[in-house]
Length: 173
Image (cartoon, rainbow, N blue to C red; front, side, top):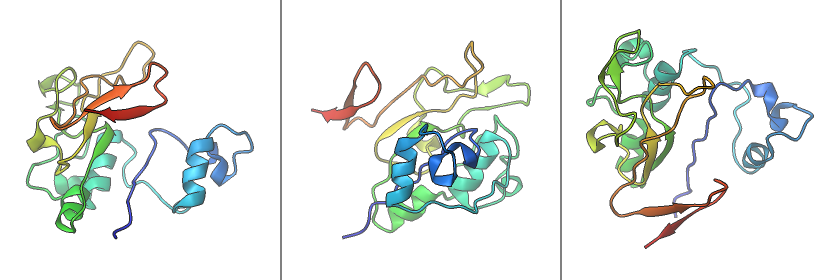
């Protein structure tokens, strides 16, 4: 049986904010538990300081300038292989939850030519993820300046019920 693979990364967070990396306050107990039971990279560095280009690098293993995603608001080309493609080829089912930021397209001032802020990201722009999908592609910001996660979608085979507290999710038929 193949092991499960979970790639989990947070957005805009320094390493010293996690207990597993020395934060004395108990503010990241779930991340700390994942780190204790799995693999935590203590020497990981970002090749890009901006969200979209970093996600392109993480998904493809290629430099942002190589994929063309060298700033936010540039779509990942559909012919570029991602970690999802490689995992699928190895027989894994793939799923994605979170901010995608690799499907919308526009200029540096965020004038959108293609935007999935309030509609589902089409399957062909999901970077090879074919299973469960809960992601937004937009880089729009809410009133507090935090990224707003809307436009959620899932593959047709799944319906998910989320609790009002946002802490648990369960599949339903």
